[in-house]
Amino acid sequence: MSYYEETDSSILLNRFSQDMSLIDMQLPMAAFQVVSGTFQCIMNAILICLGSSYVAAIIPGVLFMLYWIQRFYLRTSRQIRLLDLETKSPLYKQFTETLEGVETIRALGWQETFEHVAREKLDMSQRPYYLMWCIQRWLNLVLDMLVACLAVLLIALALCLPGSSSAGSLGVALTSLLAFNQSLKALITAWTQAETSIGSVARTKSFEDETPTEISPDEDVDPGADWPLGELEVRNMSLSYKDGTKALKNVSFTVKAGQKFGVCGRTGSGKSTLLSSLLRLIDPSEGAILIDGVDIAKVPRAVVRDRLICLPQDALVFPGTFKFNLDPIDRIKDDSAITAVLKRVHLLDLVEKRGGITSELKADTLSHGEQQLLALARAILRKQAASGKCILVLDEATSNLDLATEALIQEVIKNEFQQTTVIMVAHRLETVREVDAILMLEKGEISKIGTPAEVL
Figure 1 (cartoon, rainbow, N blue to C red):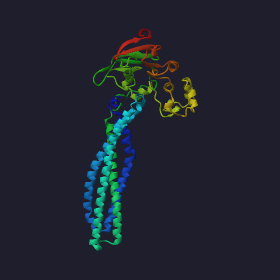
Figure 2 (spheres, rainbow, N blue to C red):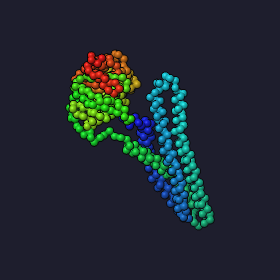
Figure 3 (tube, rainbow, N blue to C red):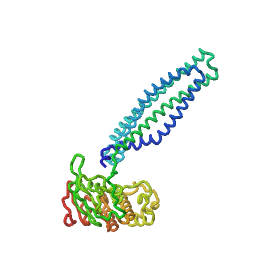
Figure 4 (cartoon, rainbow, N blue to C red):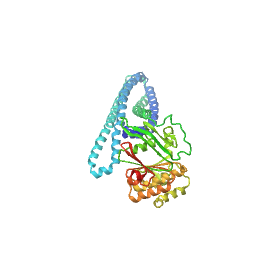
């Protein structure tokens, strides 16, 4: 979590778009062109030497000149190409931010401002590209001049030394000289592309090495297939930011198996931090979280997140069919079970009108409430696949819904998760009036805890 907060999203976009594209698409072709271009240059050079044996004497000098040309060109071109990749990052960031806030931009009439900023970043990203093509033209000019000098030398030798070559051999040599020019250009260009792509490999490898991993050797406890039964204990947990500021301070509470537990508080009180700790997105600096007596810090994060079912404020809709969205990893083999769950969340009619569970789903065709109901159906199917052994976590899942949809979701949760431990985070107190216990947070500390009647 901290890594993604500290790392610019444009850097991630650049690594997984530009760099991966160069590695997958350009590097294999560039490597093939380098090999084929090398053999073509060698064969053309042999044919030129056969046309005039005296030309072979100047081949070392030509190779020396080519070495200095490619050294100067590659050193400059390599840096320009890497600079071209780097200048794309601000442009990608601008595109991403514009797409995320397009409604706000239109509402406030900021179109011209954002268009101006986008043009500036586009111009900045094109400067290395323009310089790269200027360098390419320079290379073509220098190689053409070198080949022209070779052609003049070849003709001069033929005229000054009449017996040095026949007319046919001279024709073959001149024809091969033209092909040598094209092969040489292609070879140096392909070599530059290969070096740039190899640079992308190095950048990707560095990205992999420097990116911290969540996997820890201490996470070696197997809680068993029946875990969790639902009992949750938070014991003297504290969590600090990097600057030492406490986000949570000595938080302790216990939730019994099957209990409905509400967490309330103002914005910034620590509700989201508490949930992030429960899902092991962040680790507490002090204390522990125990589920059925097992410290989740010693359980692999993937196992913890697989056994906890989370229903966020904004439901995630995957590109694909309704069935894929409801059961992404194909745990439910019987389609009738999926249909039955859709009926219980009042989405079956909508799905059938659009072609059934195997039809394609587009997120923009569903309202926010329908997306939340779809996520709730997904949670019910996960509970069924786990044979009811799970903990449901609601992160203000009904905060942006109309009253009718909110009441429907509350009713479905009440009916479908009767024996399941439910942790319900809410900003509005009305949302948690029917829970068994409520925890009130204020500035990272527990201000009240008890039944709804005692707290409210």
